[in-house]
Figure (cartoon, helix red, strand yellow):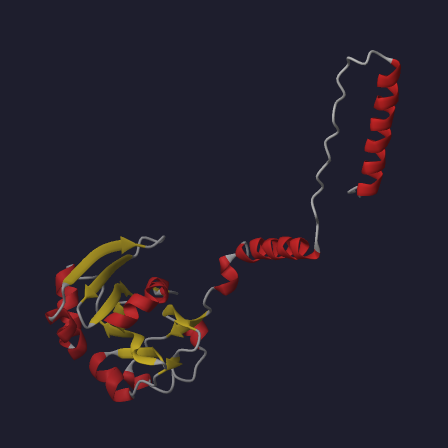
Length: 243
């Protein structure tokens, strides 16, 4: 607990000490030096100083709030990779969570684009979500049945481009195309591609399971990639097959 000192009390004490010293010096040798008293400077704890201290403490507390509190929210999408023949039935109206073959995250606020039966049958698109503020910023998944294992990385990317005109154009004008092979904790192989061009950026993850090839795409214009790449990388890395 802090003790409050009264300046008047200190001055009284100093005066008393000085008087005692004077009295003592008059009865002793007049040649003894007399020491001068030094005034004690006390901090002036004004309301302004207290307010500044409180603001500083509040700033420290605010900057130590865990960053997770401001992190972007995501929802998990459960995809069934149902065939065009089962469009609107299995994979359309059934419980997707229990029959899911793959999952990926969707940023809060993104909208689902309804995939038509014709589109599902021609290029294998199974699901797609987009940013309503930037409609060309999106993620989608395509699948192809009858494949037990992945072909070489270059061949897989070229085959994906055959049914995706936008991907063909992106590859043709790319400054760089990189690829790598990774494995999950179960040993399942994934091919990961990154395509960088002056107009757009794309991240692609491809794997085989259940005798199907699954390809998850994340696309964004170059300008949006620079702004949102943390979110786009998150949804790219969230894709995996299940079941």
